[in-house]
View 1 (tube, rainbow, N blue to C red):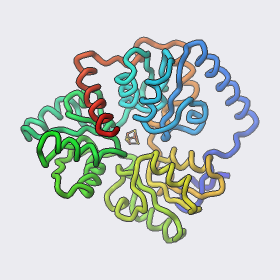
View 2: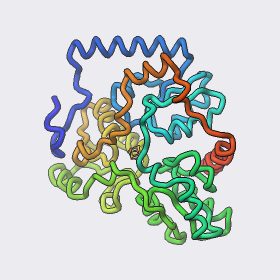
View 3: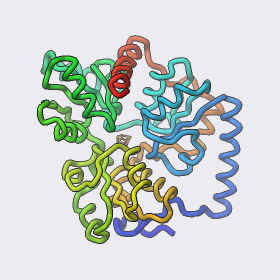
View 4: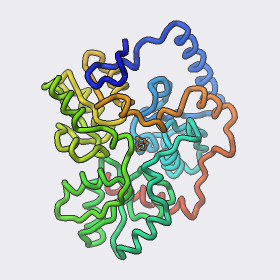
Length: 334
Ligand code: SF4
């Protein structure tokens, strides 16, 4: 049973068994979603940061780009993306003929909002001729002004490849300075000029909390997302994307893990590996409120009505260049 959600030291079983009425309610909601999936020919995608009840009904669970790639391969007419706005936009860029909706239309990403197209244009004007690498956590408009996209998994390789292509040793990197700093540490021969953006959820995690957990569980493996502060990454055993963190923890012989990323990953691991212990550095701080906005009722309402106003639409003038940045990234990645 869950102990205090504020304690960094005790395992919190978010996935604990629901009470009978909760189970009945869940069954009803899942049944309705199942019907709607059929009638709408929809595929449900859920990011690993989503609530567990949302992840558990999804057709695919993973990181944003992996999900968008999978969606593009399905014959579904409708994509219901349980994540935040830039993820649904990415899905739309890769599946222009499908109708794309967010599980909750209000779910945005504060990090993606930290740079606008106009701000990027001004940033480029300050550094003429320097190519731009945009983290996938950006709007389609910002992608359209960039040279290439990257994910937390491939950022280092993309930066290197772009520098080779352009014959340069400097890039503008937007918007996440923490990911940029991590890439910089891997590429000392390249200068990254970082935008001053960050993920508020990862920034709320503190080294002292990680160290306190490590003191209590000296054998624990520390897994950190590159969006974490640099001091946390410096003590991490593995730095990687949500997918890398999940795969590492599942494959490891270790029994205790300090998971320095959004709490959904810890919750999912706790569900999938009940014989292991997973902690986030203070669970309350590791929750992204935007990722927790989507509830089963929102998903049902969206699939019932397919509200025109909430459909993800990207004008061609933005979609074409934005899609090219994704295509170049995928070409580099392949
Ligand atoms: S966890 Fe961070 S990067 Fe992800 S949606 Fe929330 S604010 Fe944005």
